[in-house]
Length: 638
Image: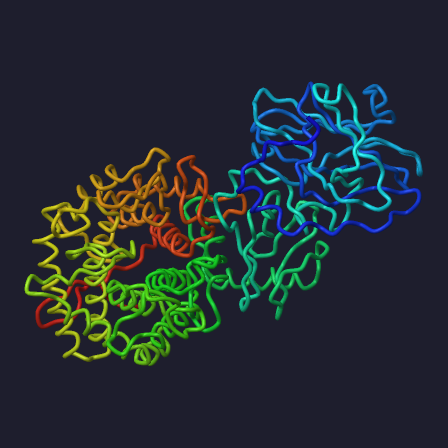
C-alpha cells in the first residue's frame, strides 16, 4: 500500500522528531534541491515490491552527496540510493551508493547521507531513487510530509502490490541534494540514530565553565570531541561549542577562534594536574572523566550528578567522590569549591539534605535525607587535605572545620549501644528497617577522617571523641556485619550489597576476611551483561541493569587491596561501556548498551580514583585511631 502503516518504535519518534523543520518557500525556477519536512513515514522502500523516487532539479553542475530521512525497523540489510535520468530505468543511473543498516547501528531513524559523484546539467530533471533490501520483517520507510510544498516537484511511490507499479503523489519526500551548512545532518537535524543509542537520555556535555548543555544521543552519532576539550566535531566537519557567556551552543566552522580558545583553555587545565592511567584506554577515560566532572561542577561549588532534569541536583555523596578525584589529580580549587558548597548547605544539626538545587537554595522535594553524607563529606575533606598544597593548607582547613565538627558530632551521637548507627536510607536512597552497611562504612571512614583532621590542627578533645566513636563503630561492624559477609543490613534479611567495597581502601583499612566478602558479593551481584547490580535485596529488584558506579566500587576496592588482576578486569568492563563520545554511563542495560544518562559524575570519579591506584598512586586511607592518640603512622601528611 502507498503509505507505511507500521510505525517505528515510539521511542524513536519521541527522541528524534520534535518540531518539524520549516518548509522552504517558493523554490527557484530551475532548482528544487531539497525538502526538509519529515513528519510521516511516507513510503515503504523494501525491495522487491517497494521503492520511492523524488524528482529534483539543480542549478549546479556537480553532484557530491544526497541525503534522505530514513526510518528502519530492520537491523540488517542495505539501502541503495541512485540518481537516475529516467525514473523507471535503473540503467539510466548516473550515480549510486549503498549503505549497510548494521553499519549504521541497526534499526533507527534520521538523515542518511550517501556520498555520490557525478556531473549534472543545470535545469535538468533527475530522480533520486531509494530501495532497501533486508531479510527482516520490520518496516523501512522514506519519510516526508503530506503538506503542500510550494515549488516542489513530484514524489513517486513504487508499490507493486497496491498500485501495480509507480504512482505519483502529492506528498513530498524529505531529501537534500548536495547538503551544505545547516542542511548537513548532526547540526540542526540528527544523523541516522540507531534505536539502541536512545537508551540513554544524554550522551555528552558542552560547557563554558558556567553554563552546561547536554549532547543528546540523536546529535552524538558520528560526532567526536576535539582532544582535551568539550568542543564537538560534527559529522559535517564543523564544530559545536558553548561560547563564553552563552547559555546555548552554536555551530561554527572548524578552527573557529572562540572554539579553539576554549579547547586550549581546557587542555591547559588538564595539564595543570595529572591524567592518570596505566594504559592508553585508562588515560583516555580519565581525561574525558575529568573534563566531564568539570562540566558538572557549577561556579558556586554544586556538583550535578549528571545533566538531565532528574539528575541536575547536587548530592553530598557524588560531590564527595568528585572532590576526592579532583584533589588527587591536582585540581585543588575544584575540590575545595565542592567542600565549600557542602559547608554552606549543611543543615543546622550537622546533616545534609539528600540533594539540593544547584544554586544551593535547598532541596527540590521531600526526599528523605541520608546519614551517609556525614561520613562522605569528612572523608572527602581529609582526602582534599592530604593532597592540598602545604602552603596555607591548615588555614583553609580551619575554614571547613566547623562543618567537619558538626558532621562528626552528629555521626558520633547517632551510634547506639551496639556501636552502630540507626537505620537510614543508603546510597540506594531507599529506607531499610535496620542498620545498613552503606551507611555504617562511610560513617567509619568519616569519623576516622575527622579525628585525624582534628589531631592535625591540635584539637585533641575532638580527635579523642571522634576516635572513640570510630572504635565503637568499628567494633559494631565487626560483630554485626562481618559474620554476614557485610550484607546490606545487619539483620541479614536484605541480601548482598556492593557497599561492601566501602570497607576497603581508600575508605577504610580492610578488615580480616574482607577479601572473601568482596569475592562472594561480586559473584552474587554479577549480571549476564558483565556488570553488577547494586544489590540483590529480595524485596527490591534492579532488573537487568548494571550500575557502573557499583561495578566500579569493586575495581577501586581490589586496586586498594592489591588484587590488581581483578581490578583490571572490572575496570576494563566499565571502560568498554563508554559511548561513542567516550563518556561513562550511569547504567548498562540487559543488551549491554549504555543507558540512563552519560556521563555520570560519580562513575567518572571512581574511574579516576581507580586509574590512580592502578598507576601506583592510590588514595590514602584514613587512619584507624588508637586510644589517647591520633591516627596511625600510615596516615602521615606531606
